[in-house]
Length: 95
Image (cartoon, rainbow, N blue to C red; front, side, top):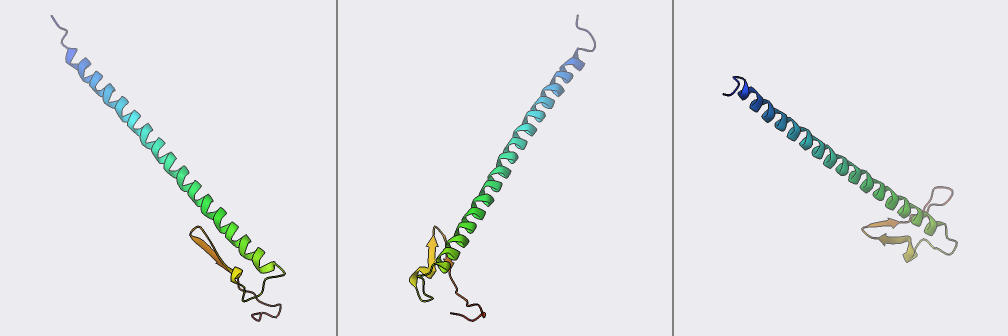
């Protein structure tokens, strides 16, 4: 003969299994969100590095002693980005 509270044990096992499933799914979702945020930070850092490289390239071209204002090297492209050198004299006038 079965004990009168055997149905309570079956319900407790089901609740324990559902609780474990909930915890595991929460861990997987938090892990996926962490990966997504790290990818976003990495992408932003890459874009900042590209922008700094383009700014440095434009400044190096503008400061070169052999570059004239109408030179073709004053406009450059790298990957999808580019630079356009504008030379201004010490008085603020265009050279």
